[in-house]
Image 1 (cartoon, rainbow, N blue to C red):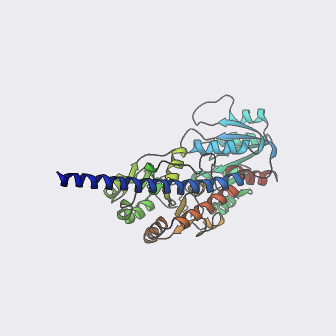
Image 2: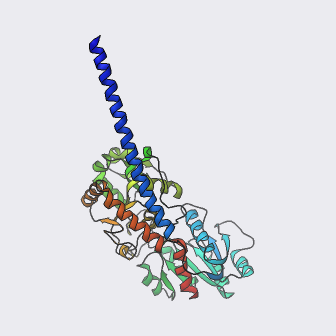
Image 3: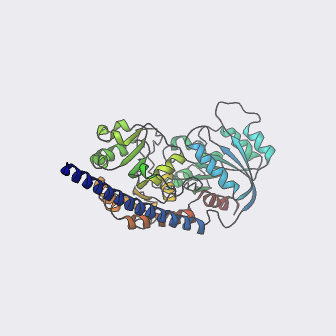
Length: 382
């Protein structure tokens, strides 16, 4: 009986000690993350996402918004324009659906200073020709270069201004006779992508959001055993292409496309967000028979940075124009280097957070949609 009492007392003492330790750990963890979010908030309050000037113009925006992910891009552009121009009108273009009035009639009646089209793959270019004949400026912002250049080659000559998010496409479009071709990558919609408190039960070491294009499959097959040993989250289509799918199956949210708000939560829940650009010659959903290379960063680069999460990305030739590698973003050039840098930055919190904070600062200063659209309007209107 005495022995049982001693064991019971010892167990109670141990339990109380564990509770104290857990309470201290929880307090320390909460304080650490709260302090970091406070530092993020200080940056957000001190840097305006808006440009220094506005334009006294009217823009007619032709939205693509009937399929993901274009709805989110439409919304970011519309809100960005509303922040910097006098008036924005919206025309929703849906191929195969008769609309009264048609785009040209709508534009001629509205008399905007600029008609801006997103992507334009399914647009009836005869409508654009009629708008130009009426003396209204037209511009197109191409969303998927260089992966659909077989399609865009026939579209771009119908517009006054061509804006592409891919540096390597500038010369290609100029060779088609286009005189006003400009480099304009996407940006971060900082109304959605921003630092956020996420419950600790949802925390992850590493995340990757995106579809399993073949270059991604090749890399993730090589790092699968390592990532399976971490608290990893992967989402997107076609991940069953992995030879080592079973190893990572519990970490993959298969065939699920996260909307921007969900992506923001997952980036904020992760200590490190991985990025791996799509290859220009991937056979999946690719219309790039000329094999135009891909040099520019994808939109995910800006979105991750806006969340205040450290980004570990593969190297794109033009990445350094937007973020300084080693200071605002971390790069890798091989599967082994990816593993080494994940391991390093998971165990060096101060360095990881410092890089993420500098990226957040740079994003708000330069890479928001209002500021990107201001660059466009500067080109068109001076």
